[in-house]
Image (cartoon, rainbow, N blue to C red; front, side):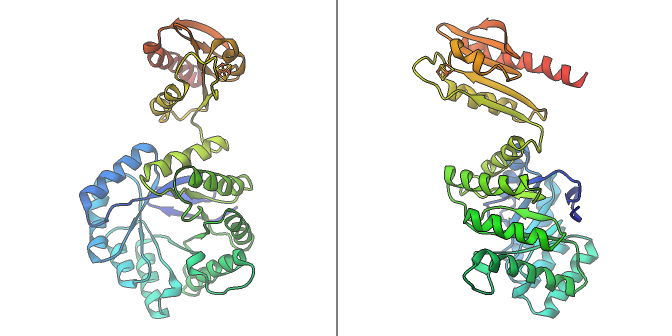
Length: 344
Ligand code: SF4
């Protein structure tokens, strides 16, 4: 079993469930906007948040941000050891650094500060920080990350999380499989610079999904350009789809000429309303009753379109006909019944 580390009140590694994290896009020193973005991330289910620390103002802002948020905060420092120490002094629950960019004495100071507060350090490599270049780039990536790990171990520091990230799916997979064989520290998974919208979702789902199915990975960050809330939603959906997390899965038919309801919008509305429910439940949204009930019968709860309304069905059995404006209300009613049943 992998080692574990504690980031605030969240455990990464060991037997802990895989956690979902994200990173803010605000200037960290803009405390108000940063807090407001973190609150949105928390509501979406983010479990660890990372902020960029570019200067002293950012590092000092950590203390004020932490007073207002519930989830642990990670300070992301590129190379300045003083900012790493200042972030730790201001209450960061974990730092991410690149020890290869620091002299040994400076690294010693950072390690001493982290040890003093009992917080972990994340190290690793991405394609931009590879030290050696051979024809096997995934291996260069993995070896660069392992070098960073050894730098911390030399200082007697073992509270480590490791990441190896590439924008290439296969490189990310191979590099992570390699380090998983070599070390026992918890692994942070992600595809870096994954891209925008569907591209990022597809790449992250393949790489993260493949690795988690092989039992590799203890915390995940889906990188998507834009609003980070989407990263959390996609991260949680990956875990639900793999059966690693309880949650509501909304299935929807692709629609065809027989569709009697707006499947896409109804499915989105249902997702938004039930995403917070942490129970393994499947809700089906089907365009028509003719094929919909049969196709959606393995769902716990479903709705299928009629010319003048919709039917609600529970485990394949029709419960009632409703007009379209009451679909959500009635689904909530049956969902509550199902939840009560699960809890009994
Ligand atoms: Fe078409 Fe009905 Fe099947 Fe949806 S459930 S794809 S509307 S036949």
